[in-house]
Amino acid sequence: MSIAENVTIHPSAVVEHPVTIGRNTMVWHFCHVMSGARIGADCMLGQNVFVARTATIGNGCRIQNNVSVYDGVNLEDDVFLGPSCVFTNVRNPRASIRSNELEPTFVLRGATIGANCTVAPGCTIGNWSFVGAGCVVLRNVPNYALVVGNPARQIGWVSRQGVRLNFEDGLARCPSTGDVYRIVDDRVQFADVEQANGK
Figure: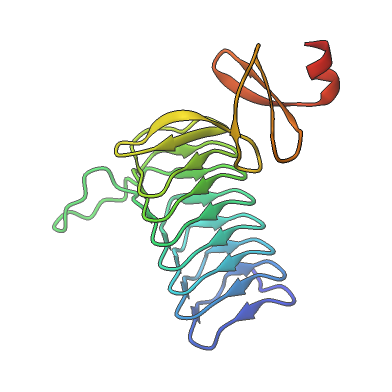
């Protein structure tokens, strides 16, 4: 375990050793990173972020202020966590009962979790999905899904840019980039232009 080159750690932050922190990562005011935590390269941890011992954070993640990444929470690359979103890791917590039965949570590549969301233990947030602000997530979120509300419900699909997709004949084009997406059996896949033209 090691801290790579060009890592910025604010003097008010507490970083226990040993930890792994990748190059060019920034750990800002009043953060607490516990020993054993793994944080990738090119990440940004905003003010008052907590990272537990067994938490893993991939490359290129952006974690906004007041987020706690508890034991059992696993972030893949390029994940965005909005301010004050909340993870949980025990289904039936009691102050008088010490339980090691953590239910792991997985936030897959490119996913966004909006401000003030709560994610129940054991959920998987799919690749490039978008969880709207204030959601309460009680079940898995599919890849590229857009979910909102309490409890969170899917209302559509988004591109890798986070832009709403409108499908016609099973295909959609991102208005921002022109990238093409295919929907098959209620699952969205990234498709190249040749695939789209060949249908």
